[in-house]
Image 1 (cartoon, rainbow, N blue to C red):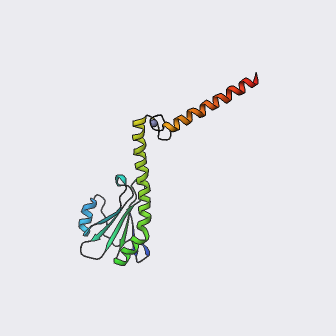
Image 2: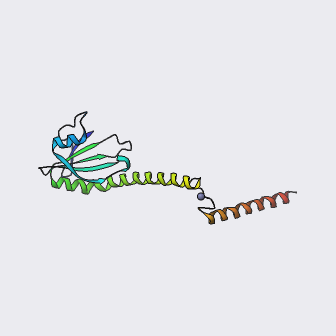
Image 3: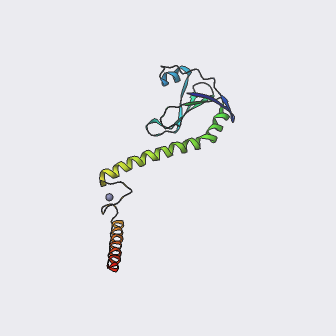
Length: 159
Ligand SMILES: [Zn+2]
């Protein structure tokens, strides 16, 4: 985990959040440091590309927990020491983080759709059959017939 502070547009290495202990459950840590979930602004499929904001129970302090690597390994905690910093962080970075998350989500959805297509049609969605693309199959058939006719014509000319 990497810690930063985002103070009214300025990035600072490290932050003042109490340390998350090695074997400590994340929810236990949150309880211990008196933070609660504020909202997700990007929830990736299967907990990848996750971005969430937490708020201190009594103070006007927030932190963002960002995980934008595809293995879900690297987590960044960005401490937002006041309301302007919180608003500026959302304005500056939420669209980019959401974009990364949604492109990963779309790839996951596409992969699921591809598997479903294969299950129903017995072929990849890049190929076609009379069931899923009858027009394309007819046009393919006519193209093959034309090519075969041209080949035959050339062979006959050669004789
Ligand atoms: Zn098909």
